[in-house]
Image (tube, rainbow, N blue to C red):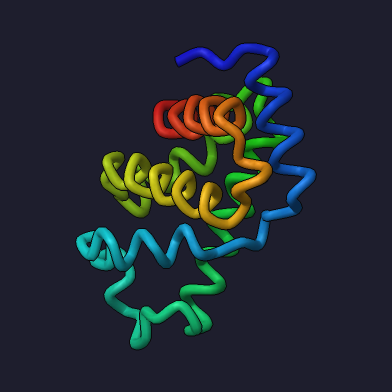
Length: 134
C-alpha cells in the first residue's frame, strides 16, 4: 500500500499530537493475545504489564514507531538498520509485525477513541503495513 501525502500528514498529526512514543500497552497486549510471540522473550522472568522488561521493550517498540513516523517520507532508507537487525540478527518472524500492528491499532482505538477517527484508522493501518514490508 502506498501512503499518500494526506495519509502521511494524518499519521504525523495524530502521532505527535498524542505524544505516545513511550506508550507500551500494544506490546503487552500482543504478548497476551498472541502467546507465541513470547518465545522471543523467554529470558524474561515476569512478562506481566507491570514488569520492567515489558515496559522497557514496549517503550522501545513504540519509540521505533515514532522514529518511523519521523522518517515517513523515506521509510525504506530510514529504517534499514532496524530492519536488518530484526531480519538477520534477531531473526524475528515477519508475521509478528502484522500481529504487533494489529495490536497497536486496537490499543490506539481503545485509548484514544475521540482522536482515532476512521480517517486516522485507515492512515495508521496503511502506515503500519508499510513498516512491515520496508
